[in-house]
Length: 286
Length: 215
Image (cartoon, rainbow over all chains, first blue to last red; front, side, top):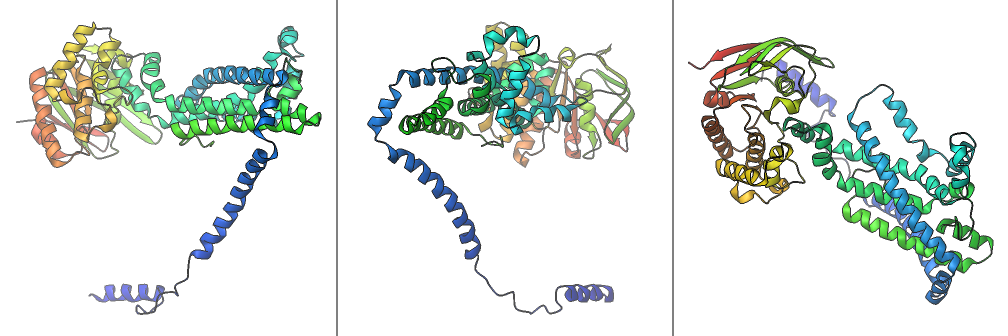
């Protein structure tokens, strides 16, 4: 060993404490760390389960079924299913092109547009309802006012404004995760941009599409504030499941509200199952 | 034939200026250079996938600088192969022909030919996800060859292959070149590839290209 190397060795020894034979730090258990985290997690998990159990125990199944036979509630179920499905289709229809352009095309003001697209996610839902109501006081929207406001289209539009933002975000992440390389190869093989998109990119995005659809559907089902303000809560006309719960609670009919809540829990479980089965990896949303 | 004249391209801090080289019809050229030297960018520029800031690209004596990738008719094999993951091997091979609206019977015949040439017969109904590196590379090669291009660009086609598969692929590339007579530009940083395949060798270093012919 040269004198220079010796010098370096001794200086590094000095940095590490100077004595190579020193005993290692005392062994401490990791258990308290894991236990404290696990207990905190368990408290939340138990609360969730207890909540669902309480719902299930509060009324007998025969009482739920009786509530669900009510024609008003049935109409609300049908309108919910119909409006959520329509909203989902509309959201995907818009989210696919926006998500693709945002993922692939650089342009000036992209960051600003990106922030704008997130507004419905961060805005209080009630504000969206109020804003839609105000919007329909101005032309050209005002000309459609009597066909939209407090009618079924208002239900769909209220759901769409929020659900679409989630679908757009999911599709953007989906396209971000698909390498543009395969698309480029398709271009060299003779495709136009449009052919490359439909033949190569779109089929690869199908999982993301399913995720975006599921999320949009679930968001629409839970939408309440904007619907109440923009579409009202008229039985047999604009009443959806979330408004039914509100109306039944107002009328002091807790069991009917609970029956509808259970129905929505069932729908949520179904949505979660679909989402888990087909994977929501990378969506950052579930 | 490929003629690149005074090609300039830039992306962020990276720039290549005034690159010129020429590959004669039927030649197998190998372009060598370190990682990050811009080899892939040159291939992408020739394919029309990367905008250039100056210069001219001529293929078969026509100026294609302003042409779209689809018009150039180049068989391109990218480094990561980028097979179409939702399509079977058969559909990957048939892709360019379907886009060109070939008749079904002709497509089937061409796919069978390619499967024979590249030893893909047993894999035709598989999805790319389950293929080994060498198999995926042969599919990518077949996909590019399907439309009978007169020019093929290969980006590091032998990286990430084990030694044995590498040998097989070298053999296969030489064989394909012999049978098809196409002009090829093969990018690599591995001198062995050039020794085995190159009629003409280019070295990209410090932004300039030096060319040597096989003696």
